[in-house]
Amino acid sequence: MSLRTTNMQPFDAARCPHRRRNILTGEWVLVSPHRTQRPWQGEEAAPSATRRPQYDPSCFLCPGNKRSGGEINPPYDGTFVFTNDFPSLLMDIAPGKKTEHGLLQTKSEKGICRVVNFSPRHDLTLAEMDAGHITNIVGAWQQEYASLGSHPKINHVQIFENKGAMMGNSNPHPHCQVWAQESIPMEARKELQQFKKYYANTKRSLLSAYVRVERRVKERLVYENASFVAVVPFWAVWPYETMIISRRTVGSLLRFTEKEKKEFAEAIRVVTVKYDNLFHTSFPYSSGMHQEPTDGRPHPEWHFHMHFYPPLLRSASIKKFMVGYEMLGEPQRDITPEYAAGVLRGLSTTHYTHSA
Image 1 (cartoon, rainbow, N blue to C red):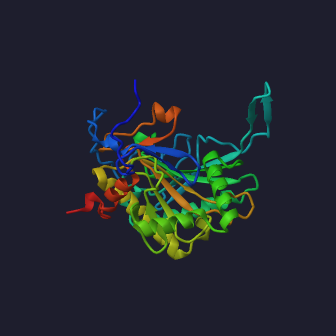
Image 2 (image 1 turned 120 degrees about the vertical axis):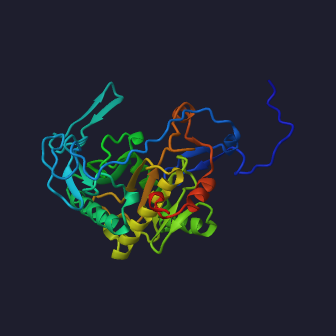
Image 3 (image 1 turned 45 degrees about the horizontal axis):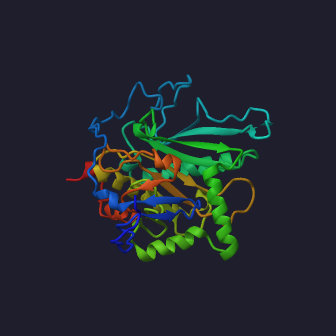
């Protein structure tokens, strides 16, 4: 079989396969925009149009209900935070380390897992809340980051939300999780290394330079206000992946001004509303903030940002899977980040259920 090409086409990133480097991790993603022309023969299923009640007596997270661990929730009327009844990390374990056969390493890991209920309302998501309500949630995140991060054994605090059954969320009541642990986990550690490398050479934040680029070219910009930008990252893996980045170089939520706190809430509202408006569905995603480690060391290199990783590709029911080449080679996407940003940018910031 000959590999010789007689009709070589000029390279155009909007039409030709290419790789893009993730500046936060140093890893690469394969982009194949020409594949959007192929006929789709994937799985389709009708999205659920069921509206949840404001209160569900069988929900473990609704006010006044018994949780799966046996505790009774208080009749809360705002955010409600509690220690996870079935945590993935524990504090009361003895330190331990073992190497077997000179290769296999095991190390104990201390940690605390918390749950933050966003609202007493069972039927609301962030996209359906106003910016004032989300600002109160940001306040709860600040308190958890400060409280957990001050513990001498906690060196990293990860706040994240899995929204929707498609993302493995078994309880639809609006909530997120906070995992605080002894080690800096791998994804945050990769970013820390890239941040440090860039700061050592420039004495500036890597993401501050990136924000300047995105605000100049505007191709991947989805939304901006005085304090934050929301972009589809140049290196995005998921079809409609976005990232909210502070315009000022700050390491964590604790360094926000009151104005930044409110404008961060507004950026979250806009991004999640646009997601729901894309396919007129409650858009599933995993999201989370990357903040500076709480290891007691200065981190002038760190720049606050929040990732949104949604799986939906062509409709409310068609999900992108990481399979085959992506599991064995590297991540791959078909639609370009520029195309995805253009679609999101053009969507309304009014939730589709509130539109005329």
